[in-house]
Image 1 (cartoon, rainbow, N blue to C red):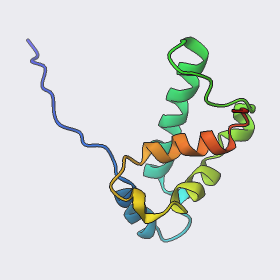
Image 2 (cartoon, helix red, strand yellow; image 1 turned 135 degrees about the horizontal axis):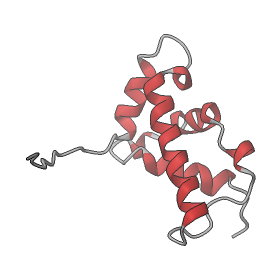
Image 3 (cartoon, rainbow, N blue to C red; image 1 turned 135 degrees about the vertical axis):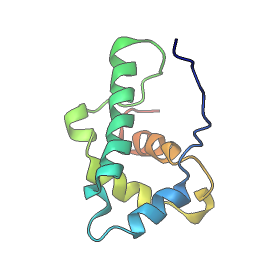
Image 4 (spheres, rainbow, N blue to C red; image 1 turned 120 degrees about the vertical axis):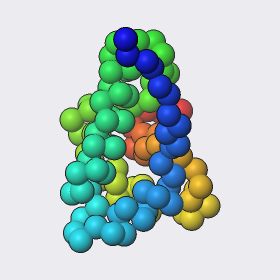
Length: 104
């Protein structure tokens, strides 16, 4: 019988995200780990948007135009140091708030 074990998986902070990007020999958005991190978040957001009423409308533009990993990573890299200890995923949400095309 398999036992279930839970492990603590702390969230990636903005500082850790920045450190990963700083270690990249080229563009940060070309790193597989960054592509997986941002791509996984985009997949989750799209699924929640299409399949549930869980989220309020987060984006109004077509996903093909908005889900640009390189643009999202550049946005995340440009954020002020005040967010250094915040969850890096919050920057992805800020990107959608700023560029998602929904009028508030």
